[in-house]
Length: 107
Image 1 (cartoon, rainbow, N blue to C red):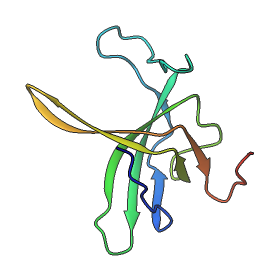
Image 2: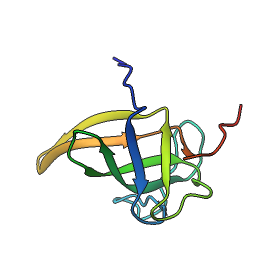
Image 3: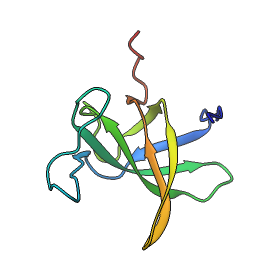
Image 4: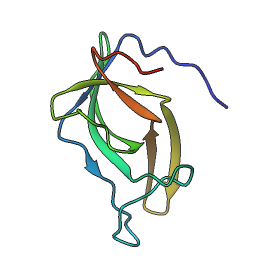
């Protein structure tokens, strides 16, 4: 199920420069099954007024050009998936792309 979520009051900041996501099994760069692009991961501080800030890892296909440590951005097409293994559980955050804060979205 896809639920629309209003992110207009949520801020996303890269805490470090984005880096290529590496597969645990193959030790090679992860690639998108849909596009074949290399997957990048962004360590992200998520904050909004009235909520406690949290650090998440956000993955996107293709290099998030222009995004550097301490840069603000908006995830485009943000999705969250829960996962569970014998050793734990959590959430995986994915986006189709990122838009630098203050940048004009390409049409």
